[in-house]
Image (cartoon, rainbow over all chains, first blue to last red; front, top):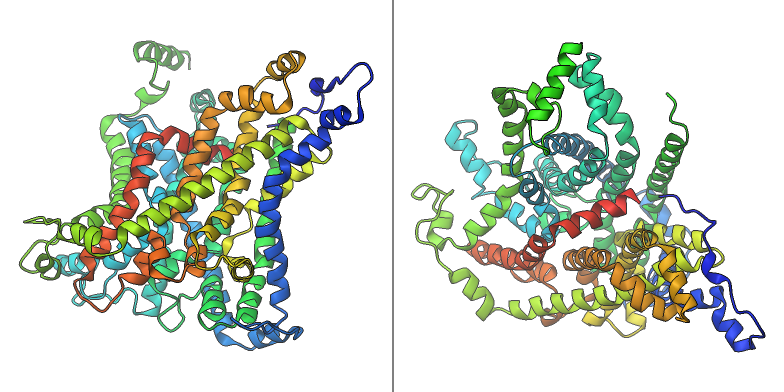
Length: 319
Length: 302
């Protein structure tokens, strides 16, 4: 984890009288420049530049096939008065909060289960990760079929069990649609949370639990005072990633509902796609995408402080 | 107190090496309720969509829509009609090929770039190496959803619109940050002494990288490869935005756009398409589970 700066032995360079060229080719910074070049080229051309361009585009009225003129904050003023935009902001926050909370709860629970001793442990662990491997869109299509308004297997089973009397319109009713996409998102996200937290759990020494048990700790106390504190740093990182990817989710929604019914599941990303690419108003789409940045920065800041806390924990371990 | 320690010692001594010290405290019924039952329920929920996918793709049409006469949880006369229709009557093989081509191309480019940059950051220790490392980490946090609109106009300007090449060039922005961090972790574990010896023997930086570092970091390279490949296969929003014509599409985009007609019998071929599109990844995963898990957890821990 920690990088020790002292070890730089390899550069005890060139005794004697080196030529300019050999000095240059022996120079670490010059060599590093060439080594970094491909990465820098990709990240600047296709990441940093578009990021800046996106912010610029949000101040123009660019459309597909027509260059835009600078119009100041008109796009944002327009969005400010747009109830659909605010609905999408609400949906995004709602979706992110609920889905992340459930993912965390079930993921942690699953990780604790998988950390116990049982037969076929390795196989079960690899099976758990399968939903994360399969491309999201393809599993979303399977959910689309499971949520079908006429032939849904869930409706069929519930009717047979006598719980309900008519088919549930999973993706046609606003509340059901929200619940359905959240369920699909949780389904896909739980394996990631569980397996990464499991990796954290495995570093906790079992002797701590034994000692606590001898001292008479209950299983809740063991979790609360051993597992949880030792796991906090990895929880911070995992949940930041989870929140980040849920907040910017696009593909699941697009494959399942395309933002419908009546915009009830429109997230900021899907709204941005609809306004920017489908309706062709690139400027407005870019403004919606840019409006996501403050939220992302907040998430990254939380991640940053999570890691700081981790360093602090490793530094002074005396409580 | 002493009794219980003694007991526990006896129990650990009796049990094999792979059992944990306290497992004797649990009775079987208790384990059934607290461990196996919840685990079983979670596994069923996690796997059910795949079962449903497989089942639907081999069900004859009349069993698909008649849920009264046939039990929907099983299939009576399985048929490969949907799969053969998919492979021989649609452009599906072409889409699979596109996806494969894009994934392999982008992964290859990213791994080469990542090996170089990870080596430079961990071993050359140039001025500002740590800052560059942090910047690359931040690049990992920039999601495609806020970049696709400006990128579409960049791609348009370079004349790459509707070409799989555009994806090969854009995907590395998703893969390089991740692979670089993963490989940095691997490179740090390789002892400096090996490099010093090589330097004394007159090897250049390039030779050290190719002949010493890369062969020693093969497990890391495999992890980075698997993870990147999966990510490419999974990517949707860029592919949806940049690719317009049907034959150029990748599997996820084509499934969403090309199969969705009003036909009530679409489900068979739709599920077959989803199944065939997932299989390559599942097979790859089955062979490299350990690498995949270490990639995922390694990147988070780092």
